[in-house]
Image (cartoon, each protein chain N blue to C red):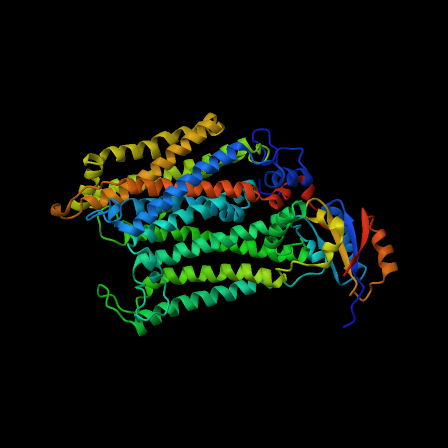
Amino acid sequence: MNEPYKTTVEAERAPVIEPGHTFGTVTEKISAIVLTRPTSNGWFLGFGIAFLMTMMLLYAIGYLFLKGVGIWGVTIPIGWGFAIVNFVWWIGIGHAGTLISAILLLLRQSWRNSINRFAEAMTLFAVACAGLFPLLHVGRPWLAYWLFPYPNTMRVWPQFRSPLMWDVFAVSTYATISAVFWFIGLIPDLGTLRDRATHPAARLIYGTLAMGWRGSARHWHRYETAYLLLAGLATPLVLSVHTVVSFDFAIGIVPGWHTTIFPPYFVAGAIYSGFAMVLMLAIPIRKIYGLEDFITERHLQNSAKVMLATGLIVAYGYGIEAFMGWYSGDRYDAFTLWNRLHGPYAFFYYLLLTCNIGIPQVLWLRKVRTSPVGLFFVSLVVLVGMWLERFIIVVVSLHRDFLTSSWGMYYPTRWDYMTFAGTIGMFLALMFLFLRLLPAISIYEMRTLLPEAEVKEQP
Amino acid sequence: MKRQPMYGMMAEFDTAQHLVDAARKTHQAGYQKIDAYSPFPIEGLAEEIGFHRNAVPLVVLIGGIVGGLSGYLMQWWMSAVDYPLNIGGKPPHSWPAFIVITFEMTILFAGLSAVLGMLALNGLPMPYHPVFNVPRFALASKDRFFLIVFSSDPKYDPVGTHSFLEGLAPRSISEVPS
């Protein structure tokens, strides 16, 4: 498997792309989803529901602007609540997209070629959902631009020694680089769509976006260099983003936050939940659009293995947290552990352990890894578990800290739930639009996987 | 400058291997101003047409250095010079706290330089280009491979170049109007 752009059909292993495809059929099959296939009723139904949920999000945000964050359940001592739980959850989901598109590219894992495009789209939309929450949470969202260092009449500058400022830079850089990486990857395929579209409007739009791409050897050469360098830059970036997110907690002195295990354990958790989301999207997409030739059993298996590995790292993180609670001898740390196991939110902690450590162990079984339905449900469980993890970190740590007089409970309101459900709707609506309007699988990278793409060295 | 009536002569091939071989022969025959078009990147093709200088890495390096320096200097100037503020007794110039944003700015500038540099060096966006005048060129984004000899090449002559390209056994040959 050291030779990257080769289809290896091994007896034991499912291939990356089913045999019998040519440049023409790959192009036809992927571009047909966008250009010629009629839009199905199922698409309209799915998009309609997602769109209504997006409207609900806008309603919840509109009411928030009118009334302020008091409509949410956040209060002292739990000042972070759902907004930060959802922020960390969404941004973590995005990480798998960058892992697939950048890290697996550098590791020459050619199987990534058929899932990187929609995984990157997933990253982009997840980051868009994530970015909403801190902005809404600042209280006066219309002044959120104060976070950026711009010359202003107040003659003040942001406070760069705060991890929250680091977060602003990390997340906005991540969003920008993810967007350009995704767009750069699309340019050659937009050229294909421009040349294949028959409707003048489609030709104009795809043609404008393709920017006159013509596949010149000089262009490809610079393009590949730029793409590889972007991948090299995105790799440390993606690791830094969740590290910085974990600093938001770890730099603080709250028991349950102030720990050095946070950065690696957050990054692993991010990739864990991200791959779960990739599977939850890939499994229905390949079925509905008949893309089983391109997103094969191999992709599902590999994603499941990544989930299993990162899940074990997360389990190790939980173990170390518990161990340090006991070993540090710090009474507040010890109490945090006791409170997780026996406090009022203990049910959620056990549920978290079941979802993130218990159930995913079925992925050791080949039967589960090769079953789309089984994987879909395990992924759903992992996504729930990872949401609960952030809930435990944010809410359970905050609700009982040093002083018993400042203890409290957190009660999310319907606006919290509406905002959260609304971002899921927005994410799905964007995903539906993406599937309908852009090639969900990178056409040009699929061409490179075909045996015909090989060129012998010069004699 | 006198407007040349023809932009070049284009040959169409069926396989990537055929294109690479043809590009090598054309370059070896002394043609300097040539280009090749393919629906996916082909390793080594750019070298065959005599393209060796790729400035993208340099642009990215400069972008990264500018980003890192501006990120650090921005924080230093804002926190230590223009608006020193005592936060928990930390010195105004707390370099360890500035590392994260310095890093992020390095990545941001380097990444944007990679994208913008690649587009600028490639001369994109360029919505119009003479090669699009050839109707069959639409297949260059699907499954065909093209080689062009530009009319600005000193060795270019309509008859000689045509017969040379024919010797490469292409699927078709077309003249590209400018």
